[in-house]
Image (tube, rainbow, N blue to C red; front, side, top):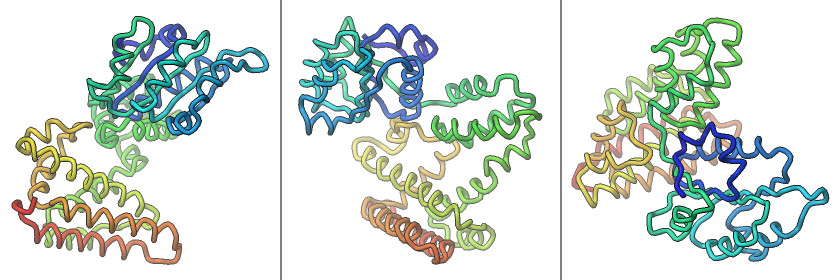
Length: 336
């Protein structure tokens, strides 16, 4: 059976009464929320965490976990992470003898033809919940729920939080934790909120990042002079660069089957509306070879930054950004 995430997320009985649930999709934050909820609801049960590789290496491990009762005869809640088609035959057999135990499965994207997905969708006993990417509305609902009763939760402040989250539920939860602690006994102030969330720093680097990817040498050089690249944020900067590189790589692949606008609309998670104009331009500047080359550079730089505390990280970061700008500037649309 198929259930909608937004319908069941507040229904405790759904998670208490179903013996096996398959969660699949690219929304890692939503899957984490469901996992945390199930753990909380089954505090009195024995929790068992397995990965697909554990099951493939030891075929009978799932059968053993189900059949072996704990000392106090507790029900077992068995979580299986990173599941795919490979374990379906083993899982199907285990579900026949599940008894009072529960098997909760987490998978990435599963195609419609997936045997695992099809089995749960057609089942009259077990449930499946697709975990699609969040949008602005779902992120706003989380903010309103978590910050209910806080003074100063204006539309402007809500939008600041939404924009800063990049529609990433995990990042949002981390930011909300900081907001709850800081503004616990005081009104939410927009200026203090921006400082707390490093919005100005993030905006400055994101502006610089876009000019680098656009191959705009003049603006890149000016922004490099004006922007302070903080040493303790360089790994974070590399993460932002890698996210954009991977997004461009995926768009390049999708655009082989359709035009770039259609490819952008098919992206999962969806491209944030503010980023669309720059990303559209960048698809004309970056090809597979260049993306692969820079990903290798960022990987090596991250290792160097983490393994050598004495190096000047900001100088190395600036060199990377200048090199990337040169690559983008020299590239053309027909290199794809």
